[in-house]
Image (cartoon, rainbow, N blue to C red):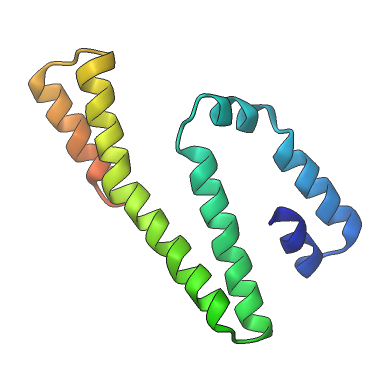
Length: 116
């Protein structure tokens, strides 16, 4: 996906460089190995952006579905999965008390930028 986005926006050299930096970025390898949600979020964002650029070139039902599916996946990850992971980690991994756990879970469920 990163290669295709690079080819749409720039040339082959920039696209290949971006693809290699994304594939071998040390932090991405760590997050992927640790099974955190960041690689899934980055994949959904890349697919969403690719769908937008493809829709700009030519309207297609396939890319509309890809856009809507990736947007729904991003909303679902932020609204449901993230608070659930915070609660699970606070309950089973860190043994946090009930009040700090409730605060952390509600904070994780807040809209993006609400706690800035």
